[in-house]
Image (tube, rainbow, N blue to C red; front, side, top):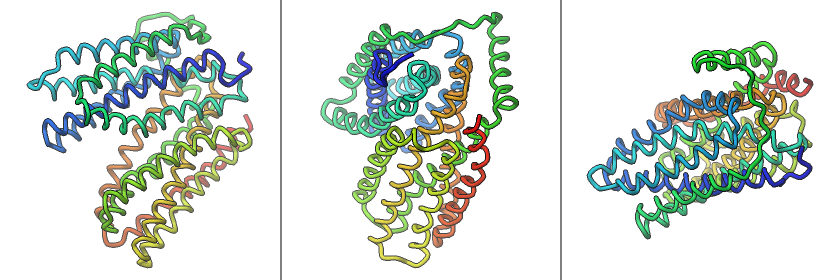
Length: 411
Protein backbone atom coordinates (compact mmCIF):
# COMPACT_ATOMS: atom_id res chain seq x y z
CA UNK A 1 0.00 0.00 0.00
CA UNK A 2 1.02 3.63 -0.34
CA UNK A 3 2.99 5.56 2.28
CA UNK A 4 2.48 9.09 0.88
CA UNK A 5 -0.76 10.93 0.21
CA UNK A 6 0.43 12.10 -3.21
CA UNK A 7 1.83 8.81 -4.45
CA UNK A 8 2.34 8.39 -8.19
CA UNK A 9 -0.99 6.76 -9.00
CA UNK A 10 -3.15 9.05 -6.85
CA UNK A 11 -1.34 12.12 -8.21
CA UNK A 12 -2.08 11.02 -11.79
CA UNK A 13 -5.74 10.39 -10.91
CA UNK A 14 -5.96 13.93 -9.47
CA UNK A 15 -4.24 15.52 -12.48
CA UNK A 16 -6.53 13.55 -14.80
CA UNK A 17 -9.52 14.79 -12.80
CA UNK A 18 -8.34 18.40 -13.03
CA UNK A 19 -7.93 18.23 -16.82
CA UNK A 20 -11.14 16.27 -17.41
CA UNK A 21 -13.39 18.16 -14.98
CA UNK A 22 -12.30 21.62 -16.10
CA UNK A 23 -12.85 20.57 -19.72
CA UNK A 24 -16.29 19.21 -18.82
CA UNK A 25 -17.42 22.22 -16.75
CA UNK A 26 -16.17 24.79 -19.28
CA UNK A 27 -17.84 22.94 -22.16
CA UNK A 28 -21.18 22.45 -20.38
CA UNK A 29 -21.24 26.11 -19.29
CA UNK A 30 -20.44 27.39 -22.79
CA UNK A 31 -23.01 25.11 -24.43
CA UNK A 32 -25.70 26.23 -21.96
CA UNK A 33 -24.93 29.88 -22.80
CA UNK A 34 -25.08 29.05 -26.50
CA UNK A 35 -28.57 27.52 -26.05
CA UNK A 36 -29.77 30.60 -24.15
CA UNK A 37 -28.34 32.96 -26.80
CA UNK A 38 -29.68 30.90 -29.71
CA UNK A 39 -33.23 30.42 -28.40
CA UNK A 40 -33.74 33.28 -25.94
CA UNK A 41 -36.02 30.87 -24.09
CA UNK A 42 -35.56 30.10 -20.41
CA UNK A 43 -38.02 27.20 -20.81
CA UNK A 44 -35.98 25.48 -23.52
CA UNK A 45 -32.77 26.21 -21.63
CA UNK A 46 -34.12 24.84 -18.34
CA UNK A 47 -35.72 21.80 -19.96
CA UNK A 48 -32.53 20.76 -21.77
CA UNK A 49 -30.39 21.24 -18.66
CA UNK A 50 -32.86 19.23 -16.54
CA UNK A 51 -33.18 16.37 -19.05
CA UNK A 52 -29.40 16.23 -19.50
CA UNK A 53 -29.02 15.38 -15.79
CA UNK A 54 -31.32 12.35 -15.91
CA UNK A 55 -28.78 9.81 -17.28
CA UNK A 56 -26.36 10.54 -14.42
CA UNK A 57 -29.10 10.13 -11.81
CA UNK A 58 -30.67 6.99 -13.32
CA UNK A 59 -27.55 5.15 -14.49
CA UNK A 60 -25.06 5.86 -11.67
CA UNK A 61 -25.91 2.57 -9.86
CA UNK A 62 -25.06 0.67 -13.06
CA UNK A 63 -21.84 2.68 -13.28
CA UNK A 64 -21.04 1.45 -9.78
CA UNK A 65 -21.67 -2.16 -10.79
CA UNK A 66 -19.34 -1.76 -13.77
CA UNK A 67 -16.65 -0.19 -11.55
CA UNK A 68 -16.67 -3.31 -9.34
CA UNK A 69 -16.36 -5.71 -12.30
CA UNK A 70 -13.92 -3.98 -14.66
CA UNK A 71 -10.51 -2.41 -14.04
CA UNK A 72 -11.38 1.13 -12.98
CA UNK A 73 -8.37 2.55 -14.84
CA UNK A 74 -9.65 1.03 -18.09
CA UNK A 75 -13.11 2.54 -17.52
CA UNK A 76 -11.65 6.03 -17.02
CA UNK A 77 -9.37 5.73 -20.07
CA UNK A 78 -12.12 4.41 -22.34
CA UNK A 79 -14.66 7.03 -21.25
CA UNK A 80 -12.24 9.96 -21.62
CA UNK A 81 -11.24 8.80 -25.12
CA UNK A 82 -14.95 8.36 -25.96
CA UNK A 83 -15.76 11.84 -24.64
CA UNK A 84 -12.92 13.35 -26.69
CA UNK A 85 -14.26 11.63 -29.82
CA UNK A 86 -17.84 12.82 -29.15
CA UNK A 87 -16.68 16.41 -28.63
CA UNK A 88 -14.52 16.47 -31.78
CA UNK A 89 -17.32 14.97 -33.92
CA UNK A 90 -19.76 17.48 -32.42
CA UNK A 91 -17.39 20.32 -33.34
CA UNK A 92 -17.22 19.10 -36.94
CA UNK A 93 -20.99 18.75 -37.48
CA UNK A 94 -22.13 21.83 -35.51
CA UNK A 95 -24.08 24.39 -37.54
CA UNK A 96 -26.68 27.03 -36.74
CA UNK A 97 -29.63 25.04 -38.10
CA UNK A 98 -29.08 21.98 -35.90
CA UNK A 99 -27.17 23.56 -33.01
CA UNK A 100 -29.81 23.26 -30.27
CA UNK A 101 -30.75 19.57 -30.79
CA UNK A 102 -27.07 18.69 -31.31
CA UNK A 103 -26.11 20.40 -28.04
CA UNK A 104 -28.96 18.62 -26.24
CA UNK A 105 -27.67 15.26 -27.50
CA UNK A 106 -24.08 16.07 -26.48
CA UNK A 107 -25.13 17.19 -22.98
CA UNK A 108 -27.12 13.98 -22.51
CA UNK A 109 -24.15 11.89 -23.71
CA UNK A 110 -21.79 13.73 -21.32
CA UNK A 111 -24.24 13.05 -18.48
CA UNK A 112 -24.42 9.38 -19.44
CA UNK A 113 -20.62 9.11 -19.44
CA UNK A 114 -20.45 10.85 -16.06
CA UNK A 115 -22.76 8.17 -14.62
CA UNK A 116 -20.10 5.54 -15.33
CA UNK A 117 -17.00 7.72 -14.83
CA UNK A 118 -17.57 9.18 -11.36
CA UNK A 119 -18.19 5.87 -9.50
CA UNK A 120 -14.90 4.57 -10.92
CA UNK A 121 -12.99 7.60 -9.62
CA UNK A 122 -14.64 7.62 -6.18
CA UNK A 123 -14.19 3.89 -5.64
CA UNK A 124 -10.53 4.10 -6.74
CA UNK A 125 -9.51 6.47 -3.93
CA UNK A 126 -9.56 3.86 -1.10
CA UNK A 127 -7.50 1.49 -3.28
CA UNK A 128 -4.76 4.09 -3.76
CA UNK A 129 -4.44 5.22 -0.14
CA UNK A 130 -3.75 3.94 3.34
CA UNK A 131 -6.67 4.41 5.73
CA UNK A 132 -4.92 7.26 7.56
CA UNK A 133 -4.70 9.23 4.28
CA UNK A 134 -8.25 8.52 3.08
CA UNK A 135 -9.93 11.66 4.45
CA UNK A 136 -7.18 13.90 3.03
CA UNK A 137 -7.42 12.09 -0.32
CA UNK A 138 -11.19 12.60 -0.50
CA UNK A 139 -10.63 16.21 0.51
CA UNK A 140 -8.27 16.65 -2.45
CA UNK A 141 -10.80 15.10 -4.86
CA UNK A 142 -13.49 17.37 -3.36
CA UNK A 143 -11.27 20.42 -3.85
CA UNK A 144 -10.70 19.56 -7.50
CA UNK A 145 -14.48 19.37 -8.02
CA UNK A 146 -15.06 22.58 -6.03
CA UNK A 147 -12.40 24.55 -7.93
CA UNK A 148 -13.63 23.28 -11.29
CA UNK A 149 -17.23 24.23 -10.44
CA UNK A 150 -16.08 27.65 -9.16
CA UNK A 151 -13.50 28.59 -11.80
CA UNK A 152 -14.81 26.57 -14.76
CA UNK A 153 -17.84 28.82 -15.40
CA UNK A 154 -15.62 31.91 -15.05
CA UNK A 155 -13.15 30.60 -17.64
CA UNK A 156 -16.00 29.34 -19.80
CA UNK A 157 -17.72 32.74 -19.71
CA UNK A 158 -14.50 34.58 -20.60
CA UNK A 159 -13.60 32.20 -23.45
CA UNK A 160 -17.17 32.18 -24.78
CA UNK A 161 -17.36 35.98 -24.71
CA UNK A 162 -14.00 36.38 -26.47
CA UNK A 163 -13.97 33.52 -28.99
CA UNK A 164 -17.41 31.91 -29.14
CA UNK A 165 -18.18 28.22 -28.69
CA UNK A 166 -15.85 26.82 -31.41
CA UNK A 167 -12.47 27.15 -29.64
CA UNK A 168 -14.02 25.89 -26.39
CA UNK A 169 -15.07 22.68 -28.14
CA UNK A 170 -11.49 22.19 -29.39
CA UNK A 171 -9.95 22.93 -25.97
CA UNK A 172 -12.38 20.56 -24.23
CA UNK A 173 -11.77 17.77 -26.73
CA UNK A 174 -8.00 18.11 -26.25
CA UNK A 175 -8.39 18.11 -22.45
CA UNK A 176 -10.36 14.83 -22.50
CA UNK A 177 -7.79 13.26 -24.85
CA UNK A 178 -4.86 14.33 -22.63
CA UNK A 179 -6.65 13.04 -19.53
CA UNK A 180 -7.17 9.64 -21.19
CA UNK A 181 -3.49 9.41 -22.22
CA UNK A 182 -2.37 10.26 -18.68
CA UNK A 183 -4.71 7.68 -17.14
CA UNK A 184 -3.16 4.89 -19.22
CA UNK A 185 -0.14 5.02 -16.89
CA UNK A 186 -2.17 4.70 -13.66
CA UNK A 187 -2.11 1.39 -11.78
CA UNK A 188 -5.24 0.70 -9.72
CA UNK A 189 -5.35 -2.65 -7.86
CA UNK A 190 -8.04 -4.90 -9.33
CA UNK A 191 -9.21 -8.44 -8.63
CA UNK A 192 -11.53 -9.76 -11.37
CA UNK A 193 -14.83 -11.14 -10.00
CA UNK A 194 -15.25 -14.90 -10.24
CA UNK A 195 -18.98 -14.86 -10.95
CA UNK A 196 -19.95 -15.17 -14.62
CA UNK A 197 -23.28 -15.08 -16.44
CA UNK A 198 -25.45 -12.99 -18.75
CA UNK A 199 -25.73 -9.26 -18.17
CA UNK A 200 -29.20 -9.44 -16.58
CA UNK A 201 -28.08 -12.12 -14.12
CA UNK A 202 -24.99 -10.08 -13.20
CA UNK A 203 -26.97 -6.85 -12.66
CA UNK A 204 -29.55 -8.68 -10.54
CA UNK A 205 -26.84 -10.43 -8.51
CA UNK A 206 -24.83 -7.24 -7.97
CA UNK A 207 -27.90 -5.32 -6.88
CA UNK A 208 -28.87 -8.09 -4.44
CA UNK A 209 -25.35 -8.27 -3.00
CA UNK A 210 -25.13 -4.53 -2.38
CA UNK A 211 -28.65 -4.32 -0.91
CA UNK A 212 -28.03 -7.35 1.31
CA UNK A 213 -24.83 -5.73 2.56
CA UNK A 214 -26.52 -2.42 3.42
CA UNK A 215 -29.77 -3.82 4.82
CA UNK A 216 -28.58 -6.87 6.75
CA UNK A 217 -24.82 -6.63 7.33
CA UNK A 218 -24.22 -2.90 7.65
CA UNK A 219 -27.55 -1.14 8.12
CA UNK A 220 -25.61 1.72 9.71
CA UNK A 221 -24.12 2.49 6.27
CA UNK A 222 -27.61 2.60 4.75
CA UNK A 223 -28.76 4.93 7.53
CA UNK A 224 -25.72 7.16 7.03
CA UNK A 225 -26.54 7.27 3.31
CA UNK A 226 -30.16 8.27 4.00
CA UNK A 227 -29.16 10.92 6.54
CA UNK A 228 -26.70 12.33 3.98
CA UNK A 229 -29.54 12.55 1.46
CA UNK A 230 -31.81 14.22 4.03
CA UNK A 231 -29.20 16.86 4.89
CA UNK A 232 -28.60 17.46 1.18
CA UNK A 233 -32.37 17.79 0.65
CA UNK A 234 -32.79 20.54 3.26
CA UNK A 235 -29.43 22.33 3.56
CA UNK A 236 -28.58 22.49 -0.15
CA UNK A 237 -32.15 23.26 -1.24
CA UNK A 238 -32.79 26.07 1.25
CA UNK A 239 -29.47 27.63 0.22
CA UNK A 240 -29.85 27.25 -3.56
CA UNK A 241 -33.46 28.49 -3.64
CA UNK A 242 -33.37 30.70 -0.54
CA UNK A 243 -30.28 32.80 -1.31
CA UNK A 244 -31.52 34.45 -4.50
CA UNK A 245 -35.10 34.68 -3.21
CA UNK A 246 -34.19 36.33 0.09
CA UNK A 247 -31.57 38.67 -1.39
CA UNK A 248 -33.29 39.68 -4.64
CA UNK A 249 -37.02 39.38 -3.83
CA UNK A 250 -37.45 39.75 -0.07
CA UNK A 251 -34.67 42.32 0.52
CA UNK A 252 -34.83 43.83 -3.00
CA UNK A 253 -31.04 44.00 -3.37
CA UNK A 254 -29.03 44.02 -6.60
CA UNK A 255 -27.53 41.18 -8.63
CA UNK A 256 -24.12 42.40 -7.46
CA UNK A 257 -25.07 41.69 -3.84
CA UNK A 258 -26.21 38.21 -4.83
CA UNK A 259 -22.97 37.67 -6.77
CA UNK A 260 -20.88 38.59 -3.71
CA UNK A 261 -22.81 36.08 -1.59
CA UNK A 262 -22.33 33.37 -4.23
CA UNK A 263 -18.60 34.07 -4.26
CA UNK A 264 -18.46 33.77 -0.47
CA UNK A 265 -20.24 30.42 -0.62
CA UNK A 266 -17.82 29.16 -3.27
CA UNK A 267 -14.88 30.11 -1.06
CA UNK A 268 -16.58 28.52 1.97
CA UNK A 269 -17.04 25.27 0.06
CA UNK A 270 -13.33 25.14 -0.74
CA UNK A 271 -12.43 25.96 2.88
CA UNK A 272 -14.78 23.20 4.05
CA UNK A 273 -12.96 20.64 1.96
CA UNK A 274 -9.60 21.87 3.26
CA UNK A 275 -10.87 21.80 6.86
CA UNK A 276 -12.05 18.21 6.40
CA UNK A 277 -8.55 17.22 5.29
CA UNK A 278 -6.86 19.08 8.15
CA UNK A 279 -9.04 18.13 11.13
CA UNK A 280 -10.90 15.13 9.71
CA UNK A 281 -8.68 12.53 11.38
CA UNK A 282 -9.32 14.18 14.77
CA UNK A 283 -13.12 14.27 14.41
CA UNK A 284 -14.62 10.90 15.33
CA UNK A 285 -17.45 9.50 13.23
CA UNK A 286 -19.74 9.46 16.27
CA UNK A 287 -19.34 13.26 16.50
CA UNK A 288 -20.36 13.99 12.89
CA UNK A 289 -23.95 14.61 13.94
CA UNK A 290 -22.69 17.79 15.65
CA UNK A 291 -22.03 19.28 12.20
CA UNK A 292 -25.62 18.52 11.17
CA UNK A 293 -27.08 20.06 14.34
CA UNK A 294 -24.90 23.17 13.90
CA UNK A 295 -26.23 23.65 10.35
CA UNK A 296 -29.72 23.86 11.81
CA UNK A 297 -28.76 26.15 14.69
CA UNK A 298 -26.90 28.55 12.37
CA UNK A 299 -30.05 29.05 10.27
CA UNK A 300 -32.13 30.32 13.21
CA UNK A 301 -30.64 33.88 13.31
CA UNK A 302 -31.62 34.44 9.66
CA UNK A 303 -35.21 33.55 10.51
CA UNK A 304 -35.13 35.85 13.54
CA UNK A 305 -33.76 38.72 11.42
CA UNK A 306 -36.82 38.53 9.16
CA UNK A 307 -39.18 37.97 12.09
CA UNK A 308 -38.08 41.21 13.77
CA UNK A 309 -37.60 43.20 10.51
CA UNK A 310 -33.87 43.77 10.95
CA UNK A 311 -32.26 46.47 8.74
CA UNK A 312 -31.81 45.36 5.13
CA UNK A 313 -28.01 45.37 5.12
CA UNK A 314 -27.85 43.57 8.48
CA UNK A 315 -30.14 40.85 7.11
CA UNK A 316 -28.05 40.60 3.95
CA UNK A 317 -24.83 40.31 5.96
CA UNK A 318 -26.39 37.64 8.16
CA UNK A 319 -27.59 35.66 5.12
CA UNK A 320 -24.09 35.75 3.62
CA UNK A 321 -22.35 34.73 6.86
CA UNK A 322 -24.83 31.98 7.82
CA UNK A 323 -25.15 30.37 4.40
CA UNK A 324 -21.35 30.50 3.97
CA UNK A 325 -20.88 28.85 7.38
CA UNK A 326 -23.39 26.15 6.48
CA UNK A 327 -21.68 25.59 3.12
CA UNK A 328 -18.37 25.08 4.96
CA UNK A 329 -19.98 22.61 7.40
CA UNK A 330 -21.85 20.81 4.60
CA UNK A 331 -18.67 20.29 2.57
CA UNK A 332 -16.82 19.08 5.68
CA UNK A 333 -19.63 16.65 6.47
CA UNK A 334 -19.79 15.36 2.87
CA UNK A 335 -16.06 14.59 2.70
CA UNK A 336 -15.97 12.97 6.15
CA UNK A 337 -19.07 10.78 5.76
CA UNK A 338 -17.92 9.68 2.30
CA UNK A 339 -14.55 8.64 3.76
CA UNK A 340 -16.23 6.67 6.54
CA UNK A 341 -18.52 4.83 4.10
CA UNK A 342 -15.49 3.99 1.93
CA UNK A 343 -13.58 2.65 4.94
CA UNK A 344 -16.45 0.40 6.04
CA UNK A 345 -17.27 -0.96 2.55
CA UNK A 346 -15.52 -4.07 1.12
CA UNK A 347 -13.48 -3.41 -2.04
CA UNK A 348 -15.73 -5.58 -4.23
CA UNK A 349 -18.75 -3.39 -3.34
CA UNK A 350 -17.07 0.03 -3.39
CA UNK A 351 -18.24 1.06 -6.85
CA UNK A 352 -21.87 0.19 -6.19
CA UNK A 353 -22.04 1.84 -2.75
CA UNK A 354 -20.31 5.02 -4.03
CA UNK A 355 -22.81 5.13 -6.90
CA UNK A 356 -25.70 4.89 -4.43
CA UNK A 357 -24.24 7.81 -2.47
CA UNK A 358 -24.05 9.92 -5.66
CA UNK A 359 -27.56 8.94 -6.74
CA UNK A 360 -29.16 9.74 -3.36
CA UNK A 361 -27.47 13.17 -3.22
CA UNK A 362 -28.26 13.97 -6.87
CA UNK A 363 -31.92 13.01 -6.40
CA UNK A 364 -32.39 14.80 -3.08
CA UNK A 365 -31.13 18.21 -4.25
CA UNK A 366 -33.50 18.81 -7.19
CA UNK A 367 -36.45 17.42 -5.19
CA UNK A 368 -35.57 19.78 -2.35
CA UNK A 369 -35.23 22.71 -4.74
CA UNK A 370 -38.64 21.99 -6.26
CA UNK A 371 -40.24 21.84 -2.80
CA UNK A 372 -38.54 25.00 -1.53
CA UNK A 373 -39.49 26.89 -4.68
CA UNK A 374 -43.15 26.28 -3.81
CA UNK A 375 -42.58 26.94 -0.09
CA UNK A 376 -40.83 30.29 -0.56
CA UNK A 377 -43.66 31.42 -2.85
CA UNK A 378 -46.19 30.30 -0.22
CA UNK A 379 -44.39 32.04 2.68
CA UNK A 380 -43.59 35.30 0.89
CA UNK A 381 -44.83 37.55 3.69
CA UNK A 382 -43.45 35.47 6.56
CA UNK A 383 -40.33 33.68 5.33
CA UNK A 384 -39.10 33.50 8.92
CA UNK A 385 -41.61 30.68 9.59
CA UNK A 386 -40.10 28.61 6.78
CA UNK A 387 -36.51 29.37 7.82
CA UNK A 388 -37.00 28.55 11.51
CA UNK A 389 -39.01 25.40 10.70
CA UNK A 390 -36.22 24.27 8.36
CA UNK A 391 -33.62 24.99 11.04
CA UNK A 392 -35.53 22.81 13.53
CA UNK A 393 -35.86 20.00 10.97
CA UNK A 394 -32.14 20.02 10.14
CA UNK A 395 -31.16 19.99 13.82
CA UNK A 396 -33.66 17.17 14.49
CA UNK A 397 -32.19 15.11 11.63
CA UNK A 398 -28.77 15.63 13.18
CA UNK A 399 -29.97 14.37 16.57
CA UNK A 400 -31.63 11.34 14.94
CA UNK A 401 -28.29 10.54 13.25
CA UNK A 402 -26.49 10.31 16.61
CA UNK A 403 -27.18 6.61 17.24
CA UNK A 404 -26.37 5.35 13.69
CA UNK A 405 -23.15 7.39 13.66
CA UNK A 406 -22.14 5.91 17.02
CA UNK A 407 -22.76 2.45 15.52
CA UNK A 408 -20.74 3.36 12.43
CA UNK A 409 -17.84 4.45 14.62
CA UNK A 410 -17.82 1.30 16.76
CA UNK A 411 -17.80 -1.33 13.97
